Each structure stands twice: as C-alpha cells, then as structure tokens.
Image (tube, rainbow, N blue to C red; front, side, top):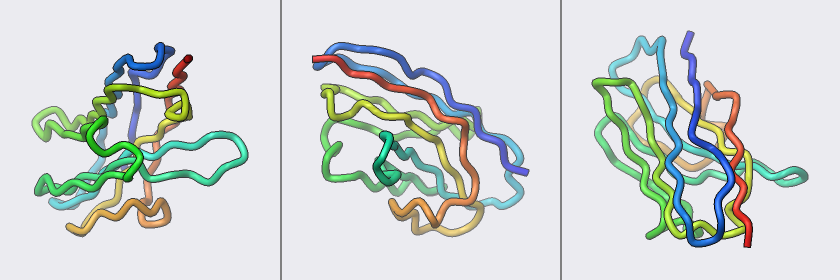
Amino acid sequence: QVQLVESGGGSVQAGGSLTLSCVASGFTYSSRCMGWFRQVPGKEREGVATISTYFSTRYAESVKGRFTISQDNTKNTLYLRMNSLQPEDTAMYYCAARQGGTYCSLQSPSFSYWGQGTQVTVSS
C-alpha cells in the first residue's frame, strides 16, 4: 500500500515562497508518476505539477515559471518549490502517486494514492 505524507504548508505574504515535501513509501513498481494537486472549497481539484520516474515534468499554465516540482528518489521524497506566491494560490495542496506508467497527466483521476493535504494560504 502506497502511503504519502505531506508537509511544508503554511501562511505567507504575496510574493513569498514555500516548499512542500511529500515522503512516499510502499511502491512496488519501478516506474511511477507523482504529482501535486490543489483544491479550494467548492471547486474541483486542480493539477499543479507532475513528474515521472524519468523526471519528465508537466505544469499547469497558472504556475509555469513560478513553481518547480522535483524528486529525490534516494529519499523517496517529492518536492514543490513555490515562488512568487499569489493569493489565488491559496488552497489545500495534495501529493498524489500512481504506480506504473511514464506519461503523467495533470488529471486527478489518473492518480490512485493521495496524501492528507497541507494548507497553503497566501495573503495580499
């Protein structure tokens, strides 16, 4: 059973930065997709960024140039570095994973495992 534990959320002023971390365990496949999604109350969960085992990345248009997804496979840890944060980035951020595959879309139904979420709040 894959387990994901996020950390690093918090409150920051507009223009600030945060780094989210997600420690993963329980993978049984050599290839996987991992990603970050976010959700605000009353809206659908939105794909923010994904990364494959082979370090292929995808980003939502709204975060390109500001956010960077990365992974340290020696530590089984996924990161999301968020710069130039804006109030519209305020959301609950979730780490997600899928075993197998090399094409990692930004669509949440393609991911099987989810963390508990970490809140990011950006004030103006």
